[in-house]
Length: 268
Image (cartoon, rainbow, N blue to C red; front, side, top):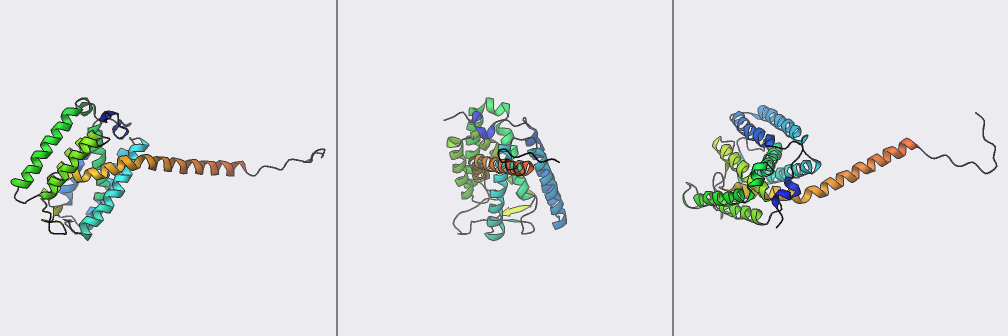
């Protein structure tokens, strides 16, 4: 297996360091607390602020990371509208998808990426992967045996997380996701911004509030980003090249037809 620190998905960007993680981990509780009791106008303002923050952080990143973040936002938004208002697997306070949620998924991805590509985590990659497996296993076991609400979904998502850590191209990205998503889910459900249903739509799978290892479910967003981003970057590059070619061709204008041999030049 390739060294996860060398995987393109977690290569340091121009921002580098812990900046995205620190900013996002501070932004999450601020938005969640401001959303408590808020109406739609305040939610729209929180959404606008979250978009501005996301775009500002993306200015520090490489084109590949920007593409990865765009994939996460698109994929996660589709999941949100399917599993919240439609299937009611979880519900937000106002029974909508708050405007800060789609860009919030982008921030969560950048924070997880920031943790995964940090020098500390990369230097001790094996220890952090092992620690994530152990802590995630303890959390999943708590959801199955000791939680006030049985949590089978969390245990399933723990198995997904273990799979990502074992075979994923960017294992340290999932380490960061475990930290950030667990933090987000615990704070969000505590603040009452969203609540998970006791069972899935079939009535067969018990769900905790929140599911114990939600990062295993979120890992599918990360996987989509890692796989789809390179193709998206190439597609955008080709589009830009075509636009530049057309603009250049228009600037050159049509070429003048060569004069017939022996013809006298026209005077002005």
